[in-house]
Image (cartoon, rainbow over all chains, first blue to last red; front, side, top):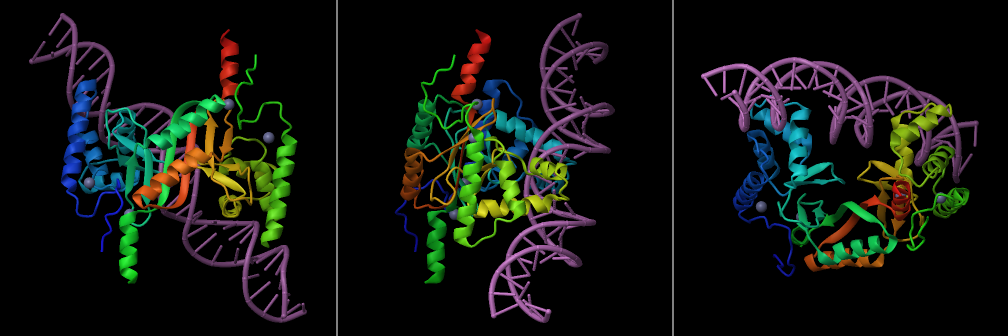
Amino acid sequence: MKSNKHPTNFPSADHDHRRCVASALDKAESYCAAQGVRLTKLRHRVLELIWASHRPVGAYDLLQQLTLEGHKAAPPTIYRSLDFLLNNGLIHRINSLNAYVGCEHPGLDHAAQFFICGACGQAAELDDARIESAIIGHAKRIGFTIERKTIEVSGTCANCQDQQRDRQG
Amino acid sequence: MKSNKHPTNFPSADHDHRRCVASALDKAESYCAAQGVRLTKLRHRVLELIWASHRPVGAYDLLQQLTLEGHKAAPPTIYRSLDFLLNNGLIHRINSLNAYVGCEHPGLDHAAQFFICGACGQAAELDDARIESAIIGHAKRIGFTIERKTIEVSGTCANCQDQQRDRQG
DNA sequence: ATAGCAAATGTTATAATATAACGTAACATA
DNA sequence: TATGTTACGTTATATTATAACATTTGCTAT
Ligand SMILES: [Zn+2]
Ligand SMILES: [Zn+2]
Ligand SMILES: [Zn+2]
Ligand SMILES: [Zn+2]
């Protein structure tokens, strides 16, 4: 049984993921056009591969995908695309996993906190005002100027806990 | 001129760092004795090297130090010591830097958030109740069970900002 | 159209971080 | 002192990332 008692950013197993992908690529195209930067075929494909799921994916996994598709790719190929996507806010890097995940709010100024489920591997991106203001508040108190934040919480999401309970009885 | 208007966890340049080191090693010895785990000569030395400063230090930097001291060390040597120190809560890993820093509260149950100054390289460990409760609060709302947290804020500390202002006029 | 330039990508090599696998030494304890 | 366990040594290799330079692609100005 599925509880549904928790509003969560974790995508359910049966959500229409094609819409996630289409929306992400669409937003990326709009953003790049507006900024006058080039979302080349390669960059577009890398972004699409990252959006293949909501699980952060490693650079060398992406590289392998490209290779399977017949693209003659070496590490710099993928890292340059990742740099572009990171610099333009189209993806995020998950430092605790050395992996990359699509940004849920490309083009919009936002804080990004990640809850990462070790069971399903998915990462949920949040923009929680309380977490953000708590951090900014502390920074202000100690006179610290913030440049970058890494907020990554690992554990088990509600869906996966339900499934684990179901399995046990 | 030094402002002093900010209470901060960043150690000042003139603090008595020998006390930091002595205290850290002392606490580590007590903790390991109490737990019945062995703070061997190697582990003790690695912890001491990590506490050489408040700057997170890389595994291969530690390895180089050991080598300079005449210790025949290979990567597994250092990583095993790091694992021990991590597992026993004597150090923390800074994921955004692939580096390790001494824990300020060994043996005590505590949250750990890090503010990391890119100018002086130092990391200040905090246990900020508001940041912690904001994260726990969000986890509760989405039914997420937390296992590990990576909270790392990079930027410039108050001391370094003062110095930069002084230098410019 | 096309020459010239800048940006993007290809290519080769290597750096930096981390772990696997197996043997040896040190330590506990009985 | 025999025995088992934990720690450490050693060699090899996996994983993640970047440096340096060559080539191609796409835009701009003639
Ligand atoms: Zn989706
Ligand atoms: Zn999950
Ligand atoms: Zn100190
Ligand atoms: Zn500083």
